[in-house]
Structure formats: structure tokens, C-alpha cells
Length: 114
Image (cartoon, rainbow, N blue to C red; front, side, top):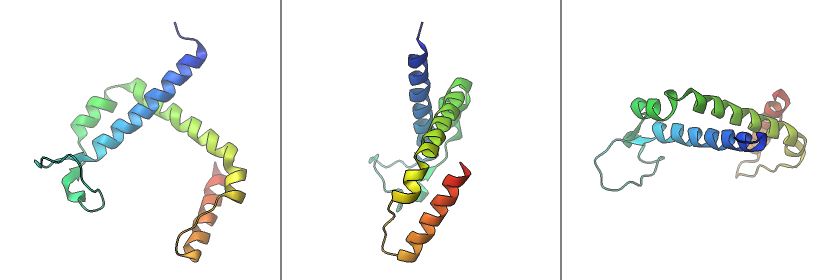
């Protein structure tokens, strides 16, 4: 039998695994090329959402979905706790100052809503 901390850790790891499985199903390569590597920005037409794989890895396992939601709750709580630091100290730096200011404003609005 697992103690409470082990159970929480197991749920977090399961949630991460479910998130990875979801992304693998989303970007499923459907070409007959030998190379398993591709550039998503350049080769988007080679990828598709594989519903069969998603069902097999995620949808057929309600506990995995529950653990994914648990992981999202933990992430939201962590971001909420880090919000004061992120709003005042997080640097957004690209080549476009106006876009950086807009991104910082949007980040602040998002963090206020959490």
C-alpha cells in the first residue's frame, strides 16, 4: 500500500505520461518515410491526429484522464503562487519591444485570472 506522498507522486507522473501520450497522438507521423525525424514547422502535412492511438493510450483509461486533470491543478496552483514574481520580474525579450509589452500585459492578465 502506498503512503499519501507516493500516491500523489504516482498521480503526477501518470498525468505527465498522459500529457506526453496526448501529444504523441496529436503529432502522429503518417508517411512511409524511413526517417522518424521531421520538422513540425516545415513538415506539418506529414502529421495528423491519430484517434485510434489516442483512444488506446488515453481515452480508454479514465484514471489517466483524472491524473492529467490533477497535474493541471497542481500546475495552476504553482503558477498562482509564482504570479507575483512572474508579473514583476519575468523578462520577455524578443526583437519587437511593442510585442514584448503586449505579451507581458497578457501574461499579467492571465495570472490575475488564476
